[in-house]
Image (tube, rainbow, N blue to C red; front, side, top):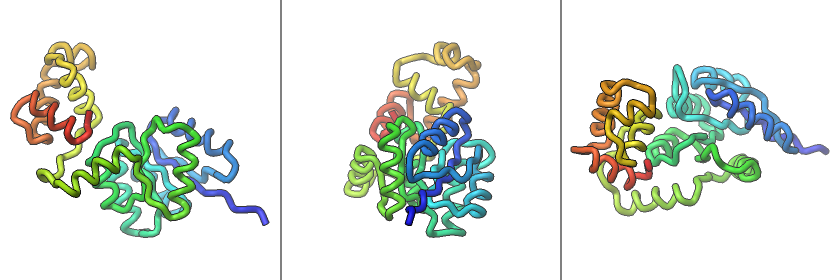
Length: 212
């Protein structure tokens, strides 16, 4: 009797990334991509219709982000096995995603062989978090700090990275091709979300929470 392939739903707004993962999984024995979606709302619809074995879920997407989609899917279908897929190893994504029902956390630069192994492990019932992320979560549980930080947008994270490198507003604006006024707004949002009084403190807090 032939073993049934693991049925996977890909929810990712970047077309090249989505197509690349689909190609990897379609070429790997034991996997079958049964659906793809480019935003959280479509991901929910396909998840509830297809009931795949595994859902790979991006975080930052239009219309509805991945964390909101995970909460909606797991609220209606608690048995769903969802792996968070993201660019940044952010603790706030991990905590919120796991609280919502995700079973794994995976960075987009994970090698193809690791990707398939992790999917198999979650499919078999394991909860998987990459070791460096798990260590930070454990430290937070043992020595809890302040209230969880509000998640940064991808653009805010871009600005934060340049702040950490010592760039001023004008230089950040030139590098990101945005106005200085927009940079100031992003910096203000970053300070508020990181509960920081100034840029130096914001960078320190970001590093402490694994955002840099």
